[in-house]
Image (cartoon, rainbow, N blue to C red; front, side):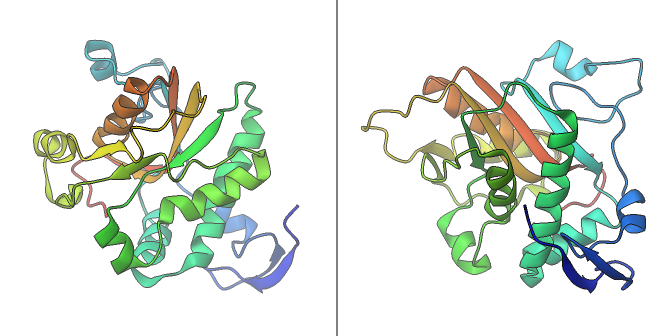
Length: 234
């Protein structure tokens, strides 16, 4: 159990005494996704359980959960984390994810969590991997190991935010590979990819392709936010 802390809400500056620096009112106002495609996580009308695109071309990912629309203030929290080193925001985002997972009471927990890898150059520039920082919170609460050395990002690609859907798929193709392909693959049948924002799903789908080619049977995605391509994402 994370101890309660006395602090100020990062969004409204109200005094709080809870596990994270986010007051109950601001948490309640977050742009939650109420219904989504079970395969890719894109928001849908309640009448649908899977989107037309996934029906037409099923992704390599088996299921997805995204908590929020990529809108204010979730976009602010993620941007501050990634570009101003507000690592305290990772604690908030990780808490929100693990809280929702506990609420969902998942029966089929994965064998491991895989934070989306950063290329070495970007990792050096940023100083940390935001997906790993979020994954640490979830891993500790649900007692799931993190596989951070399984896959590497071997190509320094253009930022996906600069590209359209077709370009994103081409840009990310082949950029992930097993870090130690000559070593025996760990016995992992079910892995969940952890990401901060999913937009087209090109990155997580590419990761799932590598995992399944290595023998993983089931791949899911847990992310903080789901964006659509015409929104500005980072």
